[in-house]
Image 1: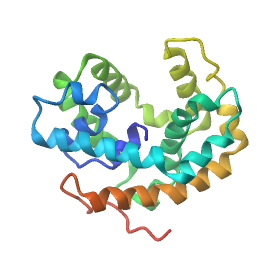
Image 2: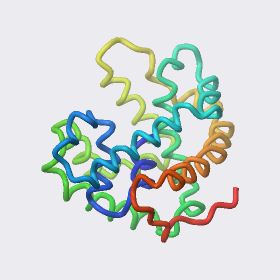
Image 3: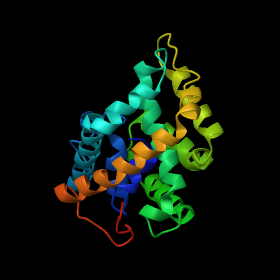
Length: 205
């Protein structure tokens, strides 16, 4: 899953937000000296990623991408899932997205000094430029995916994958709506962090 989904599945405190994103930035290499709450949050990150990567409907969604884009389809799916989470936010969370983002950015900024350098750079850009605002539109998603393609350290044909998302938008949205409630339930069942269900909407999918 991508950044917004990981923060959605985190607890409303700085340690949890830090740990739930740390898995994308070296994870276990940086967590040993961190508080137990950060370690549990990192474990939650890996739980989410493992469940996502192995879920049948997520695997099947890769076939919506053309041959030239399929190698990186999992990245595109992660990012577009953040888009769908934004589109359906009110179905999953009681707190308005604008308030959730403000609080999450504040919590992440509290731990900037503890982050690995690459994570500090990414989180600083994310919170300053409100990346999740860009994720509201397919244009923004396309720019985000092309930026990822440009950062890959070898020649690739990932750029332009937004074309496949446009072509299969409704099918990808249906995959998200089937999958995401199951992911929430999976995280709650394992309870690696103290569960805070106050703002999570009861799901009736």
